[in-house]
Image (cartoon, rainbow, N blue to C red; front, side, top):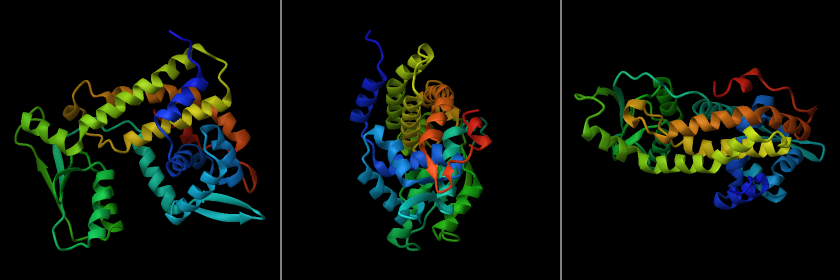
Length: 305
């Protein structure tokens, strides 16, 4: 077996999974910048992302688009620009990253939440916005206009209804299976409604891609702070893209060999090893209008508890 080379691994990873700059910047703000106050000078963000083969023009264009989409806001500091998360951006990222860093719910009482979206009460745009938010929150599609989730926080469902103008326009029901969760028909419904086969393949690809880096981190002590930051960023970026499509169903519905469990454990182990050194690199590169970025919030070191 050839010796692991981080540079070769980085090049192969970027070729196999090309980065979308908008999404990458969202990852970096959520994972690395938010714990330090949520703001960064554009020039330092460009420097931070350059080793990931992202050029300055792409960063500037994507930052502008994220402002238009309500994720970021820009402030001119002399001739330079500082970008920071909006209140809406903070809220969306905080909710998403709870799903990434916190362990999935372990207990389940067998209850399902059913959301029925009637015909005729929504414009096409409103219906699509509601559908996207329900899918993002982990609902599966049982049939057109009928969605289900076994673990939904009703507070989150109320927030989705409020934000999409769906209050009093959707029916929310509670249900429970007459059989147990090993019922063959229920297993088929779960597989089809959440496309779990595709999700499982994505988790296996994640494991195949990042497992060699854990062995490298364990055996090699000479990794540079920059390498650790790049690995941290790609790790969370890849895990986030898969995890946010994961409905986080109860383990009883997934089975003992669900690859998402192994993927989360691998991500946790790598993150623990890269965090200190990656924070050193971040503090050396990232700046705000006041100079150095503030110290990290304590919650940064409680991730993947």
